[in-house]
Image (tube, rainbow over all chains, first blue to last red; front, side, top):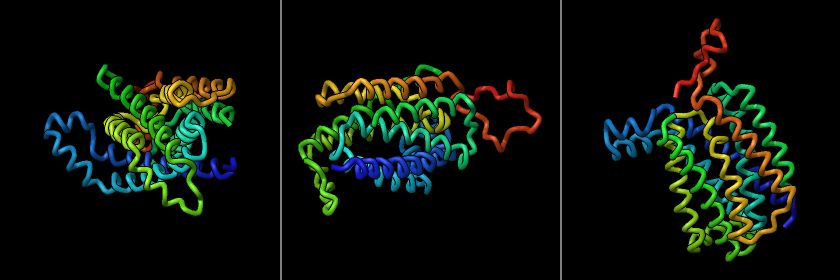
Amino acid sequence: MKSLELWSAIALIVLASSGGDVLLSAAMKRIGDLSDLRLRNGLSAVIARVFSEKLFLLAICCFCIAFFSLLTALSWGDASLVAPASASMTFVVSAGMAKVFLKEDVDRRRWAAALLVCVGVALLK
Amino acid sequence: MNYKKYLVLFAVTCFGSTGDALLKRGMNDFGPVDLHHVWQVVAALGNPWVLAGILCLIAFFTAYLNALSWADLSYVLPATALGYVMVTLLGRYFLHENVSPMRWLGVLLISCGVGWVTRGPALTVPQSRKSPIARPEEQHEIA
């Protein structure tokens, strides 16, 4: 399988995963600490609250796209290349999205870590 | 951060990497997916290795949801980066893949970079809620 097709599949995994991560993080921040919620209202209330959150359902759609892209990429390339490459690039893209969309304080420490990850990914090729 | 929260991060790491390795084992049985018949990938869901991988990824997702409920996304992702090392080890010893020295170096760099982040706070004050006159040392850890 050509390298271009493999890396296109990895790019799709990264975009879908990052979008899902941001949506999921926003949903969980709206819901609050799950452990506290479970102690107060029980497990069934936690499940009901999570599945009634629209952002959570949108995140699931993104993860479904990412999952089938992952299966396709795994059928074309090594797991030790596909999994770290897609997951680490997802980290970098998600950090950027977290700063822009979630207004997280992505400080110099987190950006420096992102740079190291990018160099690491380049070595995976 | 108490030990239960570290346990949650550990579960995210373990279940994620094991799930990826099991999916790869299943897709090895299935063979390459043809671009013109990409929907045949759905048939792979009947493979026991793929199913075991999906169970692991469900456990991963549950732990991941819990972590995101009390920490920043830009903290959780790097904090669970040990998974990159685990999936490479599983690829080498469980799936018998050829992992070149450069790929090992890449994994090491990724781990160093993302491991660095865990020394910072898990949850930060959103930038929009910060006081414009707040000093950097006032940006303390919440979680």
